[in-house]
Image (tube, rainbow over all chains, first blue to last red; front, top):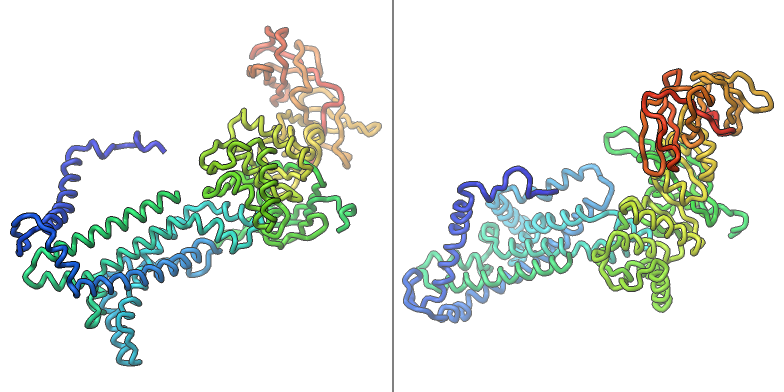
Length: 270
Length: 366
């Protein structure tokens, strides 16, 4: 248990500090620069001309940005809800039942998308929808993207929920049954409340993954189905103005507050 | 219901439980176990880990179902009833308190599930808090109270729905020595006050002897002997029971006569002594005689029935243990109270005699 005395304390090794600082700097300096230039008064992305909130106004008034944001939220929220519910059921089916033949296989299949290169999934999804459209005349419009997101978010939501279920003391459910709770009551009154932090982390992860997805969305999206990552990508191929920085800063602010909220939920429940 | 006809709170009939893991050998945790537990009894299932005592408890609770046999609760076969339909409650080894609920909410849980009216639940929770002396902590989360307090909450929670039988799965094993002693007395008090049948699982023979009305000694999935603590201690039926309960000397010998039903045994260590026959058996030939350490007194060499050389002296505070090597090479242990008078007792290497108490030796059923 006592990790302090165990073998080597890596923090005291020579070079540890330097490597840590280098990594953190590499990671956060570009983001910091990006944010600073969001407050640039000038028209050029990399030429500082004084402080201004001008580009935030431009970005928020931009119709294309608004439409992309709307699409993104719609897709992410649907994907989060569907994938979290599905992942919760899958996790319960793999931890709260007698081991069934093929369970390990099912576990691997659920998690496989995490290992498959995303571009492969993207191309496969694209051909699948193309086939649907050509063969059966089915095209759900933005629903195609939602469907794709719902599915690829499942393993991300599944992991923390399953971990939470595995850690949970099974005698708690025995105790509930012992105290006259039917299986459904035991789930609702004991298992589910204790599972909430896991579900919250799963949902947060699913949301961020969907919100941020580029590769699959890029291939599946039709005209008028631009999401925020696609919109930003589009903008970077034109002469860049600090508007991009402002948009990125808004997204960053949103992500950070989202993470803080889900962290607080998890901590409160603990 | 015919309660009068079925005085047994729990009757297990030829119960077997076989565990079959995927790709593993089937393991028989319980092998054709039958026993009867009376109403209002403090009954203990005693045995080493892996003897099947916890499995039997889980079968009575409904967390497992028997492979074979019947379990009757006041005459009703409950063997296949799910746990939530049995009027039986459990105190778990790790307490299994609901961490997201307060002390009071934990205690109220069973009553809520039974659909009792709110006023009745509140009154009952209050009464339970009082019973286990936890009134001040009713609003605390269970993670904010000590192990001993958690233990009391677990008891209150299990007693609140007035179960017909209370099951206790080694509930004292996580407590330190002093608290354990206190809780032993507390448990006995609760059992007397509530009048509920307690089935207590433990591997601690001292705990079993102190608290139980009757004890079932188990080993390898079988019940070896059922009896009061006195019967189990004074008349162990088998070698395992004699060995597991308290400390015992085993003496090998051979029956030489059985006049008037009292067998005389010629011990390999020398003398011929009288010994009690096991219940329901007339032994003959080679037998093992058991004698408790406190039923033998160390006397000067040449006196007493047995002669030997002191091999080892162990001081225990209230008493001292003398290990004496007998003529046939076997070891014999006696326990002497330290009254102060025997301060200059024999030392290792001294010759000594052993005086056996009258009517203390028992022949084991082999």
